Each structure stands twice: as C-alpha cells, then as structure tokens.
Length: 567
Image (cartoon, rainbow, N blue to C red; front, side, top):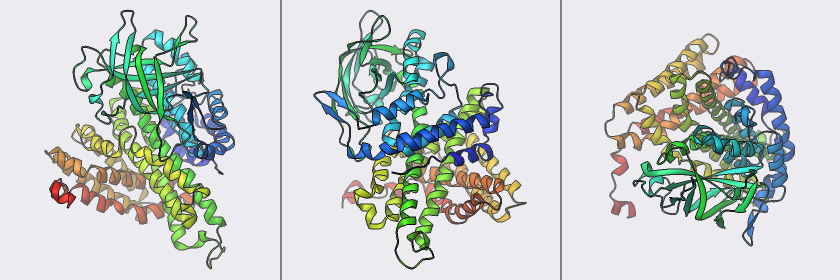
C-alpha cells in the first residue's frame, strides 16, 4: 500500500495552530526548536514511508500465530520493529538518563501517529512500551528503573499492560488475579489476563508485563489492587534474560482486524513479579500508563484515518467512471464531498490531538495546575474524537471505493477493520465521554469555560479577515457554553451521562472549527483556508443537533421498559 507520512501537515499545525512555540520556549524543551523538530519529523516520515508502510498488508494477510507455544510474528515485522528501535523512536519522550531523547510529547505524538498510518498493527508494539516506560519512570523503584528502562527504551525488551480478565473488563475492580509475597521482596502472581496486545513476540530478548493483581490483604474493588512487573524471563545477576518465568501465552484472539498484532490470553502461575508503586496503589500507577495510551490511541485513530484517506484518494484519482472533467470519479460531487469531509476531519482531530499533547508538555515544563487541568480535559476528547474520526474516515474510504471497497483485495476494508477496536480499548469512547461530563467537570466547568473563552477570543480576532467564518465559530461556541452550563447544573448524574457522547462530539466539533479558523488566518488564500471554509460551513453546524441531544436528559433514554426493548 502506498503511504506518505503527513510531515508538512504536522509542521504547519505545530508552527501555526497549536502553539508549539510555547513548548520550545520553556527551559525544559529549549533544545527542541521548530527546525530540530522538522528534521526529526522528516526522518521519521522517511522510515514510515519506506519501512513500515510496506508491512501493512503483510500483517493482515499473514497474521501472527502460535507454533508449539512459540509466537511467530508477521513477515517483515521483526525488521520493522528493529528500524523503530534503532531509530530511537520508542524512547522519544523518555528521560535522557536512561537513554531516551527527552523530546516533547507533542513531537512523539506526531511520530506515533505517522507510524500508525503506515502500519497500525506494528505501531501498537512500541506504543505499549512507551506507556510502560512512563509508568515505571513515575512509580517504580530506582533498582527497577535502572534495569528495565534502558532496555525498554532501546527496544531490546518490550512492554505490555495486563488489566482485563474474562469477568473484569472496564470494571477493573472485579479482577481475581492474586499476588502472594515470596518473602524476598518478590511476589508470586497468579491469574489469567485477556486482550493483551503484543503479549509476546519473537524479536525482543524479553517481554515485560505490568500486571494488576490483588495482595492477600487487598480490599475488594479498585482500592485493593496493586501493580506488578512480571518479565517473561527473569533477569540474571548481569541483568540479562535468565530462566523462563512461570507464565505463558495460552492462545491468540481471533480478531476482526489488527491481525498482525498478536492479542494474547496470558496465564500466570505463581510467576515472579516485583511491586511497582505502593501496595494497593496499582490503579494510580496503571493510570499513568493508561492516560499515555489514551492519547496514543487517539493518534492511532487519526493515523488509520490518514492511511484510509490516502488509499481512497489514489483510487478516486485512478478509477474511470462517468462523464467528469478528468474522467475519474474524483470529480463526481459526492465523491469530492466524501474526500473533503475526510480531509477536514483529519485536520480537526489531529489538531485536537496535538493540543492535548502540547498541554501535557506545558504542564511538565511549568508545573502549572491550569495546564494540568487542560491536559486532563482534552485527553478524553482527543481519544474519543480521534478514534471516532478514524473509524468514520475508514468507513467512508470503503464507500469511495464503491463495490471494490467490499472486496478484500482492494485493501480498503483493512483500515476499517484495524481501526474499529480503537473506540473500545483503553476505555471505551462512552466511558471517555462520561469521564468528560463527570470527573472533568468537578471544577464546576472552569476548565471547559476557559477553553470556550479562548475559542471566542480567537473568533473575535478573526472577524477582521474572516468575518463569516469567525461569526459561525463564535455562535457555535456560545451554544457550547450554554450546554456546558446546563450540564454543570444537573444534579442527577444520569442526565449528564445520557448526553455525554453527543456533548463530547459537539465540543470536538467546535474545537475543530477553532483550529480550522487558526489555519485559515495563517494561510489566507491557500488550501487550508479553503478547507477551513468547507469545515466551518458544512461540518461545524452538526454541533447544534448534538447539543440538543446532550441537553435532553436521561428520561427518554430509559423510556422503554426492558420488555419493551425486547418487543
């Protein structure tokens, strides 16, 4: 499959839309100015185009499999992972003292999204390691960090996260895995975990699992859960992989997509593990990894959408049908509409993703609570809207192909099958939306209103050059403000939850208008101004129906009895 990493798009967004200059102006990230970032993005883009993209179909057509208990990965994936690790792309934002580049997360987010667009199933492997690196950096003992972080950063070892069990999905507190103290500072971990992405591979010396389990004195629910680092091979005295631990891959899940990424059922039978963080503090430690992963998964959605868009555009340019100026279907109005919607939503979701990463970087660099609040608020929006956008674009890509989109040989369906799970894992998009209207509004909506004020301020500035677009964004923002006030005033949480998904989508729609307007101001007369006009005129108005839904309350949602639902 042909793929071209959207390097220039990222350069434009960083320099003109999401305020990357504020990040590079801090002491923490002063060594990552825009020219350095541009060089990094171009180098990463070259790897994505030349090394990863050719593996996209391999993973789908020749999936990973178990052979006598040994996991065999898809052809070429070992070389692809080697290119990622040798390029230093796993440890982009990891600390320098352990071998990382200490780059801003904004830059790492851009590179990760480009890798996801090139080959999503392989990109999931370094993403898991990145999350584990961050969790260990913040919560592990010095001894664990000194041994594991350098090897995870180089890609010699890989990392996973083990949360889900057959009876404990989003309700993690229902897990039954147990950890018994061995009396020597280690623990015997026993239990079964499912849906473990890249639970094993044949190209790393060791696979390091972060496993949630309950100590003997752990209370029921999430407050009694602890986190353990359980390696596939126990490190010897020299820190090298020694004897095999008491764990194994029971089976691989048969999935709708992401066939190149082995999703494992893992069995732990008294496996030796080390405590990460405090006893019974497992959820706090794991959430560090999960929040990293939520932003990363949002990027996976955008990346898959980019791949699907490029694939559809090539087909539309080549497919001859009907009487058009070019003779190709690209000049049919409805096909052009689909392509424009795909491109406009990619821009919006990518900007939201980068704005979230930028807020995290500013929080890291300054320690200011306002940046922390903004980062927390944008995380569920970036994850949910990014993945919903990827799914929607991939589905539209099938439609652009017409009948050929339904034929597997065209490759269009793979993007949809691969990306569909991103709205489910790392917290379903419904859970992200409920988090947004509940926990993220425990400040009475203060963070939301600060963002809304910022959107209106930009709209006011844009009136001088783009009066019509500015007015549309400003009016949409006022509607969003009123809906937010309504949500904050609801005492029954179900009234918030019933409209949480449309509210999140509406907020993302308005943010998209905000960032498109910034692009129009920076590219007057250029293609991004034209794209902004399309988005603001044709797609932004969706916010009105979404906000009407968001403010309808829970009554209608529960109007039918269970018998009536089944009738």
